[in-house]
Length: 253
Image (cartoon, rainbow, N blue to C red):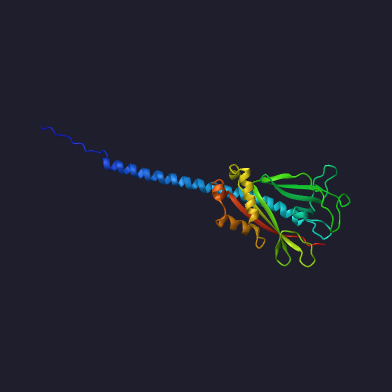
């Protein structure tokens, strides 16, 4: 009986096939890494926007509520010396008497935090009437939210012009207030030094023209080539946002 030889086929990969597979895997890995990096940047940008928007909306709503309840009349002082102080029909804090529904409120920036103070009063306590009346103390300032590097208001007169001063003129009184905030997200605040924030605030203040909204002036400065971005953290360009709201003041009585 004649023996029969069995033959086996070669099932291995050639060197060319192995190299091709490695190249394809390397390309896919690089593409995947790029996608993950892009998704990371997109996620961080979205978080920054949400963080900024949340803080700005809370601050603007607080100011809006105080202004909507404001007492703006010729015989009561408001915004003395350019400060953001006025009477409002909102409950205030008092350490010596019960809470009353009339308070003197004030806003200011300290260490990149917008602070609000309020002190309740009764009409017979310390409220002075008259065109030369002095504004009382607004109490202890309390922090609201960190990351507000600048805060400005402009007064819009009845004829549409903008001014840095509040007017009770009978011919051209203030009818609305534009509130503008420059807000930095929490992550960017961790790398923005106090000196850098002070320099940025001074630059933004110097960009206000009073011929258009503060938001337009600030965004024009930031995007117009005048801003020295190299002097600040790399993430500031994304982490800094400008928010603005105009509030119609209650009619004077």
